[in-house]
Image (cartoon, rainbow over all chains, first blue to last red; front, side, top):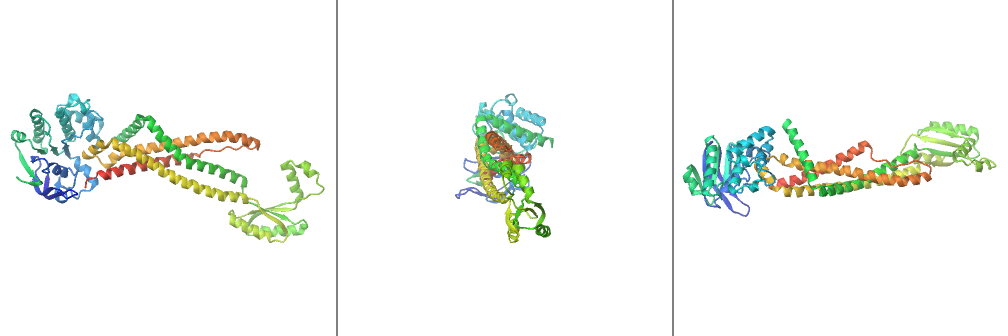
Length: 217
Length: 302
């Protein structure tokens, strides 16, 4: 599903965020990405979502090489990915429902079919009753769950989550992890970046540990 | 297919809602575009009108050749057949001096004056209708006829029309330059409006791109906005010109009454109006396209 081979990412100015990175994630696998902040976790996720391109090496996602992927093909790669951001990236000029609707609008879904899917996604994360609320009125944990609903409404093959439990207390964190676990059970490939040891213990899975841009385990 | 059409309708509806959301700013924008466009378009309308008058008055160009007083009827017949054979002449008309006098009396109401004349002061004349229409060839023909010994005076009647034509040519160039400049202004205005909109919708654009929106999807609402703003601006300029023509015609009415003619300035023809609207819509679209593309290019992954 995801295959990195000798991937380097160097930013203008010379900072090397990722060095000689090689790993593989199979279809349906759930993998943690661990390491201190600044270890390159976010950069790695950005490369998979083609938000940034590798400086050298090959990063292959669903059979497509991110380095040489044409700009026109980018949107269609991303439609197969569910992105969950640390800062949620929710839009505060519209309701929770409309936030989750956006990916379906982008893909040109039928209106009625979209509404059904949005409600199913909101139900999945336990926010069905708050569909009309503006996300600004939601708590941190609810915003995170709304972000998850938006990521899964498209039924993507791969979910990428950047510190999904970053600012949440243990109870909220486990709740979110349980949601992820349920996606894993239906065959979604998951890559979750975290520095939360308790989660790793509670929901064990393979982990890729990054240290200043290189894999350590 | 149905979904695509519905999507476009939704985008258009959204565009109008956005225009109505800040009616003051929208109106000002439309006025700026309207005024910018009405300068070159107004110039074009005036030129068209002047052109209309000149072609009406000049009709087909003709050359009057006045004969010397001592020309005999035999010589006239001879001249007449010579003129008919001339390659540059389409047809001719002979105006005997008596007829010319009668026409003068009838057309100008100077019968009192002419009646008092002891003898007819007018010469016999040929009115010559040339084949060619352009001024160079007409002048050549006139100069040729001048060398004929029996013609005392040869006059190219529509010379003034050609001078006017030259002036109009200058005017057209001026309108063209104005049009180019103000078209650029329209594109710049739209570019800037859209840039401001993009700034307020930065997050939406960023998020949309992250979850798989194509550039086309992101451009679409802005392109519609530019297109519709350009179109409405074009309509505004049409109305501004209509209003100005109304004012001008009102004051012209007093003037033309004095000269006992009936002349009004006409607005753009239907086809020209459509061209104006199409062109202004296109320029708005172009400004929006440049603006969004510029922004999208900046956020493309590297």
